[in-house]
Every structure is written in structure tokens, then in C-alpha cells.
Amino acid sequence: MDMITEIMNTFDGYFVDERGWKHYRVQGKTYDIRFHPMTLEWECNCLAYKFGKGKPCKHIKEVQSKPK
Ligand SMILES: [Zn+2]
Image (cartoon, rainbow, N blue to C red; front, side, top):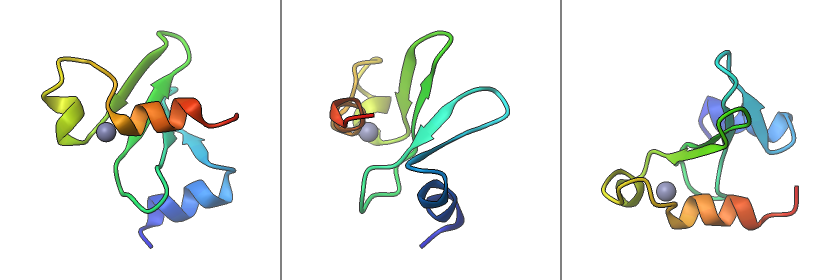
């Protein structure tokens, strides 16, 4: 388990960085899915997101579909 995943498990599924991004994880993956509450932007560091011209990838959708 990497450190960021460990932090996330400790802080109830996400953590907020110094710039205000909320970072999420999809269970069993190491992708960094993040959401900014001010701009309502979602980002992911997977290839599907990177080449998807800003369209939400399946990881973003999975996080969005989870009950908060
Ligand atoms: Zn993704």
C-alpha cells in the first residue's frame, strides 16, 4: 500500500491538498482522481482522461456515483 492510499483510508476516502483539491482513489487502483469544490472540476491521471479531452473517465464516474 502506498502512502497516499494509506492517508486516504485514514481520512474517510479522500484528502484535501493545500490547493483545495479533494483527492480520491478507486479501490484497488492507484489513479489519482481529484475534484475541486470551487471550480467543480474533476481530473484523473489515467490515460483515458488524459486523451479524452476533459471528458470524465470511468474512475471519475465511479467516484461520482459513490454515496458521499
Ligand atoms: Zn481515470
